[in-house]
Image 1 (cartoon, rainbow, N blue to C red):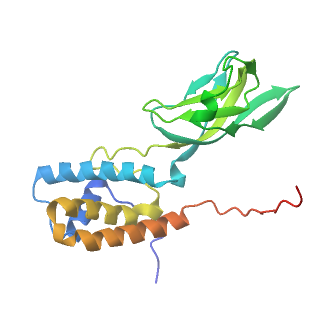
Image 2 (cartoon, helix red, strand yellow; image 1 turned 180 degrees about the vertical axis):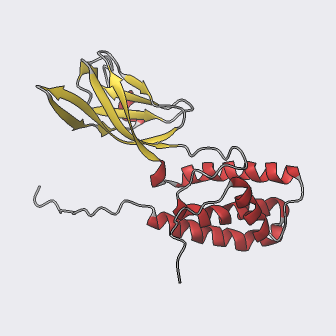
Amino acid sequence: MATSGTTDFNLSIDDLIEEAFERCGMQVTEGYQLTSARRSLNLLFLDWANRGLNLWTVEQATQPLSQGDGSVAVGTDTVNVLSAVIRQTINGQQQDISIDRIGRAEYLNLPNKLTQARPSQYYVERSNTPTVYLYPSADKDYTLLYYRIRRMDDAGGYTNTSDVNFRFLPCLASGLAYMISMKYSPDRTGPLKQIYEEDFKRAAEEDRDTASFNVVPQVGA
């Protein structure tokens, strides 16, 4: 027998909402239920950002640095900065030099934040307007190259598809069903929460970097 030959299955927002309501033993009967479900879906996306790394939301970004630059705004849709390097070109050769992330207290205790040299450390201020603070400040032109976690796109219109990797679609449906049940079908909340957590755990375990690495013990002092 022939197969479909396609691998592009996805769910629009309205299909996803319908699936979630069916898992609650209900059908969508009024416009407010759609609005309520879409609000729950957006809250679910924020919960996923709090739960940790979602690889499809990790992306590379660059920011040019000029002399004296000691901070960089990385965009209000940035959840966190995972790693960073300073890129420079010497004699026509590109070099990427890693820089270390430090905490708030370490950055605060730096004695002279106006010191200029090639940046070697950075602190991420995770506010409503996320900012990367560099130390030392740039002494000439460089490029800051970093990997960031971005926020997932909001649900938006009901005909949109979700900003979710296909591996997380079962988890998305069960998570939305759980959140809807708290408002419309509380007798199913417990079982739906259990299904959601199992689906999320399964998807999160698969959504990871599978590169191998070696751990070498330090010998001697």
